[in-house]
Image 1 (cartoon, protein in one colour):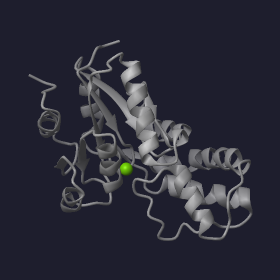
Image 2 (cartoon, rainbow, N blue to C red; image 1 turned 180 degrees about the vertical axis):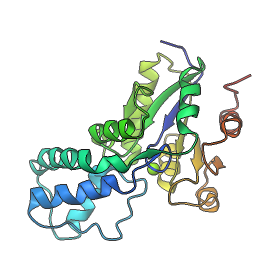
Image 3 (cartoon, protein in one colour; image 1 turned 30 degrees about the vertical axis):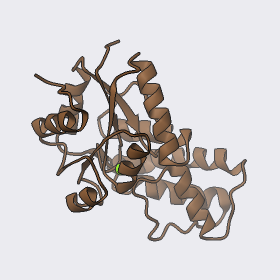
Image 4 (cartoon, protein in one colour; image 1 turned 45 degrees about the horizontal axis):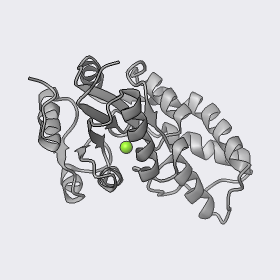
Length: 233
Ligand SMILES: [Mg+2]
């Protein structure tokens, strides 16, 4: 295990990969299969929300309050459906090369911080060819709010790398990602590869904004700018 100076927590959808609606479709199917009626996922703003938060919202909009024993059935149906829809998922440009470089960098510990439940995140990472990169993370299955999820990601990352003093930062694609990072007093590098423009992410107070993760040097400069310490010489 390395002793990194930096813990970098990556969001998945819109940041590392594009699921082309795989998760959304799987969620609609699971809802119908378990509850026997369609949920209202129309114009539901998925960006930056956790999977449990989206299911609860879709249920509330059709007047259904989910019972405790609905949840395990919903997740089982969701994972089954996602296995069928996830094939459309792909890594965003430059992501695999950047993650390989970061994984090999002794100054960097990598973690996932995503609203996907853990089983869903694993399926999406594998479909995008990004498996084998992350050893640790926080997921929608760890907390319904992005803030709760990120608390788990940060704690697990620091524990896994035995680096309690590592400079933490997050990389995400939505104003909710920025807000959750700032809630934990952690900077957020925002990438405009999801549903938000660079201008919108700047307006949401992202600490740095990049058009994408395709330019590795630009990413390294952003990490140094937001953390005050370089990860490459
Ligand atoms: Mg995202």
